[in-house]
Length: 442
Image 1 (cartoon, rainbow, N blue to C red):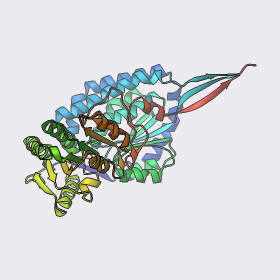
Image 2: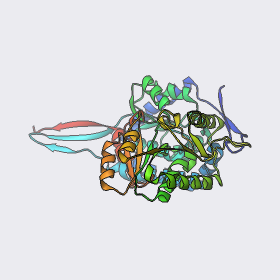
Image 3: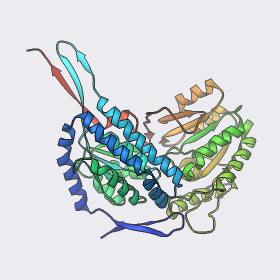
């Protein structure tokens, strides 16, 4: 029997191992979901919302337990991990309220047309390790409350987290409506090849493309990003450096919308870089490990490539001594477009800086590349802000804040970053299909 070994990113010790699903397990889970889904879809929407609300409340009670497992498996500090779990609770509660209100529209003519949203059927949810509970709760919550059955595969880097989440949520639903399978990419590909209706994946672009090749289902993909940060002339360089550090170093740079490349106007570049280096040193006073040594090797390869091509590491840039998958917050200067840190997703605590002579130059370079997840612009100019959000070919443009947004906000990635809404009320639309009923007089 194939098993997943999980090692602590803090010290490399074996946490445990779990058996992976077989092809027969995959087929059986999908068959069970297909059999259970009609009964769940026939359950009144308000009742489905009530079930989801009860599951959310139990998750709230177990938040500390989940956070401990997340910390052990991924290295995310307990407080931050618990925040992620609580974000998952909030998301489930949000969908518990929005699901029963999700409705179509009507048109009046010689007949009346009703446009009725119906569940798509069986949803496969393939979720990541970097924010495992919050992301899973978004996909599971939207799918379940709209009457779908779900087969969930968490990342092989956090299988204990996925298993505990299943233990908390699954008993609230009828048999077969929510199932969890453990395994690596092979299990995910096997699920994508099944006769299912939706495959929702949050993870790397390479995996997303493999899923697209394997599956005939509707795809919801939030994949890699190479998110730019554009720092305009006239902004406070210390404030801009705080924003850059927050975007590049939070969760050791392992967030979908982390700042991956920085374009700073030459008028503020010197003070900005100095302040960014100070912030990086402060982050290094309380380091967080990367998820594992394999991922650290990738981050180090990106940094080494930049240095070989002329970049300088003013802070960090070297693998530290000692156990665990630690990597320091790193500031690189002298970066050029062909460096991997500027054109690929590094997904680590690396802030590569490129100095530009004008806002137009920075905006042009920020618009480059195959990814289209998000971008941030720090500017005091309304004109520049307007031009930037219109020009940037991404799903989300953030003006003067690297993180944040309205409650219930949504996002729709572009290009190599994926397709479809991944959260917000719009995710309910993705998880349903519309039936039109023409109601005419006798």
